[in-house]
Image (cartoon, rainbow, N blue to C red; front, side):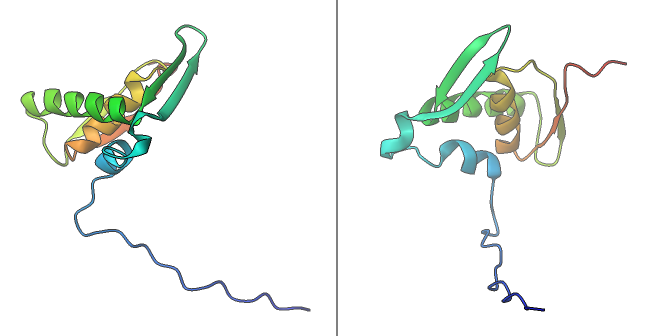
Length: 111
């Protein structure tokens, strides 16, 4: 019986203050990748849509600001129930930018 070599030691290197909504949408701002496609969403009803990293950052910032104006703050839960479109990840990441907890659901779920 051969023994496998142990895996190298690995650990998370996450800063103490980390916002995954910001990390996913704003990371490429000010770089050559800002105008590259960040997401592609295909849907039978809406067709194919794309968004660049720069557009994603702008749209998620706008959604986060709307939530803040509605009184949403860090730790609040936000239910996301949208069809398969770019609005879904924009709302999901935008809510996370406020520090809220995005709760994804499916439009296929019924009462």
